[in-house]
Length: 276
Ligand SMILES: NC(=O)c1ccc[n+]([C@@H]2O[C@H](COP(=O)([O-])OP(=O)(O)OC[C@H]3O[C@@H](n4cnc5c(N)ncnc54)[C@H](O)[C@@H]3O)[C@@H](O)[C@H]2O)c1
Image (cartoon, rainbow, N blue to C red; front, side, top):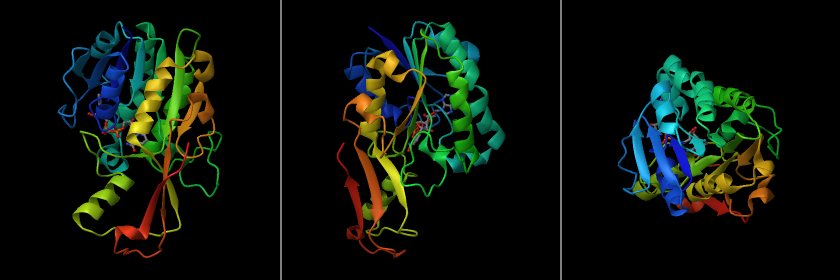
């Protein structure tokens, strides 16, 4: 049985990803500081849950021993949290990144998937934000995601396949919910207040459903290395290289139908899941 270590695996995405990995037949090690607890994880004979800090090199090296793959998601995952203590956040989101990659490689890991973010592009007027678009980070959270990417690729080798995904903002249900994400905020307000507030109304923001993006991560583990090694892929609308993965990544684009900042009813906005 192949083993996958998921850093940050007890978080919003992790609690959806981990059951999918188990169903796909992988042994899973969740390595997480449990900032939000671990109640969203299932009990399963093939799941081992380690409470650990990615900055703890010795503990991480121990946990990753014997693993075939790493999916690296642990971080301080939004701007307000990052800004609570920028120096501390930097140690988690940036400074420990290369030691983590090196420890994984030394342990014999064959594939390392880094979950970056589409926020590395900043705000763009371009209709097609493909992977070649310049990185214009607006916050430290975005900046350090972008800075980790070239570090990872320095360690790409035939034995160590390195891939970066830049996912759009994620939406949908997880046992460990995040209500700071655009569509989840709108859904919460629609359900609990019967009102959605839209600021502006002309802008578009790419979103992707949590099931779809987690299925992409599972698929990446089995992709032939030559199709993905040393590559960066957007996980969003205009998923230019999507054909390499098949057609399972279904983007969600939210566009406001009204410019009114006080849209009174959920009917005033549309959420469209465009086809693959
Ligand atoms: N959710 C989104 O919309 C979205 C979009 C693009 C990219 N991402 C990226 O996907 C990844 C997962 O996002 P999420 O929404 O599940 O975030 P999350 O905040 O729910 O999960 C992050 C997890 O990392 C853990 N963690 C934090 N610091 C740690 C440390 N020092 N050592 C070990 N574990 C630590 C936390 O305990 C938490 O369980 C992140 O890298 C995030 O930047 C998320």
